[in-house]
Image (tube, rainbow over all chains, first blue to last red; front, side, top):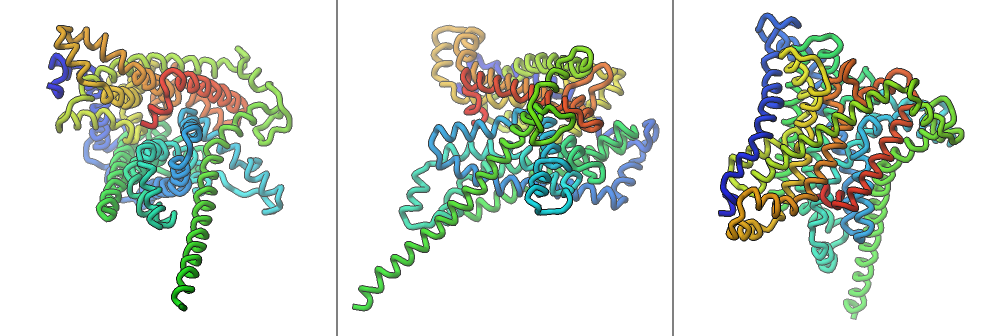
Length: 282
Length: 286
C-alpha cells in the first residue's frame, strides 16, 4: 500500500524529468561515442583513427595519469585538513556547529570562477604569499606558485573542500557522542578513539566526500587552466582545446569519453577501498 | 611491599603518557582544523578587500580603500558587456530554477517513497550529473545541438543547465519526502480526498521547505555553471562566469574583483535569508 503511494499512479510524475534526461543528457552522451568513431574533423569516414592516435601516443597517456594524480592529491590534501575540521565539528557545541557549517557552505555557493580568482590574488608574483615570504626575508625572489602543480593543488584544496565536508558533517551529526566518551572512559587514548571508533563510523561520509572531490577536481577546467597554466595539461584542457580551438570533435570526444570513464573508475576505486576498509574494521 | 609502591607509579606514568598523547592530539587536530577554517574563509575575505583597492592593479593588501572599481563596474557604457553577460546569466538561472524545480519535484514525489531495483536505477540516473564530469556533457551538448542545426542560444544553455541542476532539487525534496508521515497521506485518501487534492493540501505544504532549498541551490548552481556555459556560450549568449574567466585570462582587470564582491555579497544575503526561512545549511548537510 505504502509502496504504491496514494492513488497508485504516481510514478508517471517522473516521466517529464526522465524524458528530458533521455533527450538532452543520455542521447548527447551517446553521441560522444558516435562522433569519437570518426577519423576526421568533417565527420565522413568511420575507422576509429582518433582512438588509435590517442592511445598510441605516450603524451596522452601522461595526460590521463596526470589528471588522475591531480584528483588523488586533491583528495589527500582535502582529507588531511578537512577531516580534523569535521572532528572539531563533532565535539563542538550546536552554536559552533552552525558556524562551521556556514563557513563550509559559503565558499561552496560562491562561484568557482570567484574562488579561482582569489587564488590568483594569493599565489601571484605580487600575491599574499609572496608578500609575506619577501617581507619575512625567507626568499630573495618571489616564489613561482602559479603554473605549478602544487600551487594548483593548494588552490583546489580550498575550492573542493566543501564537497568533502558536507557529506562528512552529515554523518558526524548522526554519530552518537556517547560512543566517544565510552571509549575514553574505557581508557582508550584520543588517538585510539579516533582510529578505532570515530574514523570507522564516519567512513561512509568520508568516502562520499572523497568521491565528490575526486570527480570535481579532475574536471575543474577553469581552475586547472587559470592556476595551472597551459603547460600543465589535464584532460579538460585537452577537451577544450580540441573542440573549441582546433575543432577536432572526434579527438575531443575521445578525450571526453576517457575523462568520463577514468573519473568513474577512480570513483569506483574509492568505493572499493572503502568497502575493504569497512570489512577490515568490522 | 615493593609491588604496593610500584603500582601507583606505573599508573601515574601511564596517566602522564596518556595526557602527553592527548595534548599532541589536541594540537595536531586543532592546528589542522584551524588551517582548514583559514583556507576556507581567507580567500573570500581577500577577494572582498582586493575589490576595495584604490590602486590600478590587483594587490593584497590594497594600498588604500575606495569604491572606484565598483563605480567602474556599474558604469553603463564602460561595463556594458559585463552587464549583458550578467543579465543573460540571471535570466538563464531564473528559468533553469523554475523548470528544474517543477520537473525534479514531480520526479521526487514519484520515486522518493518507492523501493525496488528499477526505482534505484532511475534515481542513480537522475543523480548522475552530480558525479560525472560535466565537461564531457558540455561538449556532448554542443555537438548534439550543432548537428541538429541549432546555433548557440540562451535557450540551449538553459536546457543544459536544467539537466545539471535538477539533482540539487531532487536531493533536498526527496529528503523532505522521506520525512513525510505516510499516515497523513493514507488518512487523507481514506477520507475520500483524491490524489491531486492530497498532493496540494498535504504533500506540497510538508515538502515546501525542501523544494525551496533545492530551488535556491539550483539557481546558484546555474548562475555559477562553467562546464555547460563554456561550450554553449557564444557571441549572442555571453554568460557571466565565462566573461569573468576571459577578463582574468587577458588583462587581470580589477573589475573581476568587483564582480566577485557583488556575487559574494549577493550569495551571503540570499544564504542568510534562506537560512531563516527554510534552514538551508541543515538541509544541505542532510
